[in-house]
Image (cartoon, rainbow, N blue to C red; front, side, top):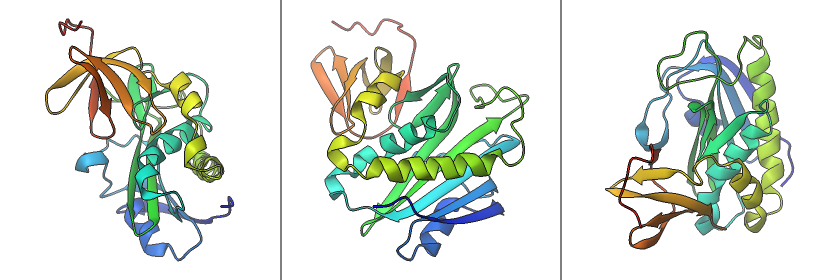
Length: 229
């Protein structure tokens, strides 16, 4: 896989995911927009968009075996770090954090060998709502979203070249703020995150032993006494 792609730059679109999938004809297609009117996140969740933001989706054919596609969100999150200032960290499996707040999220949708990898990122927000943040302290300028989109797409394509066994586990572990933290997940799980395995799964120590989480939503919480042993 090379790093060539077609760029489609839009001021606004309903969904960069849908647009990229519709435009894909074999060559990777990157759709980048300042705003989405019907964007979506993992599990159908919504995403609050900052005044200076980027929605980007890359549609591409992925030669990795289907059973390894669970690693794609982690690779996409690592690729985002390649393009952001120092001080950002990863929350498993696919959020980018800064100063304890989420600044970017990844969504991967795929079928029939084609993946659409999306990223929503708040670049700058003078007065963000509680729980939200931005990647930059000051307005980086109106063209920054395109630079970030191009950088991210190039980094993602480059990181996919070595194959699913060399997806960047060591780098991810070093950048993952979830490791060492108490976490909760549905339905009713709780433990302390200990590691990321070769498949990108989160390994969590619970009172019953090690739980291996492959997908699903995980919430980080304070160490408020789970009664773990």
